[in-house]
Length: 306
Image 1 (spheres, one colour):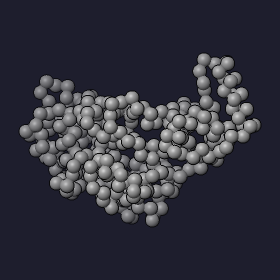
Image 2 (image 1 turned 90 degrees about the vertical axis):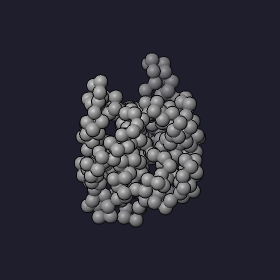
Image 3 (image 1 turned 30 degrees about the vertical axis):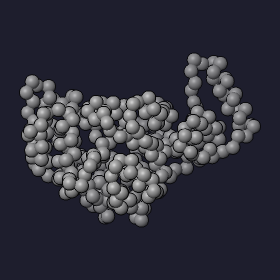
Image 4 (image 1 turned 135 degrees about the horizontal axis):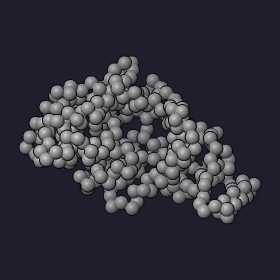
């Protein structure tokens, strides 16, 4: 895969070098490199902590830009210049620059990061298989609010919390209406070898032990700067230290019941435990709040305290 998420079609659709009748391929490559310089020189990718890679956290990815450009120009020399061919060339050129064995590759892994970016990607690659990551929605909500709040005070407001809640509620359900071949993978299952082997079988590739290690460009990754906890030295792959959060302490009992009510289908679909039992006093409290809001407003507003 390329170095993390890549909003490629956002770049392609608005690239300055593609607004002319006869675009120059070399100029397009230069604009792509400039737009994504932090992907090629990861010492600039501070949010993802890719300036501190390797076992001693003192290394970073450093791509030879001249070689990368030469690779793409060579690949596109005998192919039409379009978004599909250019993106394929990007992946091949990048893999070559980091010393990967191209002959052993059967697919590329593209990280669109947001479901809203998926449709545009599928226009070029309609037969793609899609993996949607999920986690316990209560933990996802608390993580999204607290981590972004700690990272920047600009996110410490109710609107941001509402955005996190909305994203948590929608999750993978947004894919159900799309005519695609997709699977949803629980974050909590990433540390299981059997799960990774199932993923490989579905993708038609061989399982390899390197999948147990968390790396970028072959260098160990210690997690991004949004995470409030640090990866432990012994956690070379899936890090429970980073992904674990105390959402039960962050959410009150009433809020937990409200989320359990709103997310009942999701919790059942992904087989997450319910965490709390139904108590009569809390049930009547939640019922009162739901009924009161339904009777006095046009829509439902969930009050969640963190």
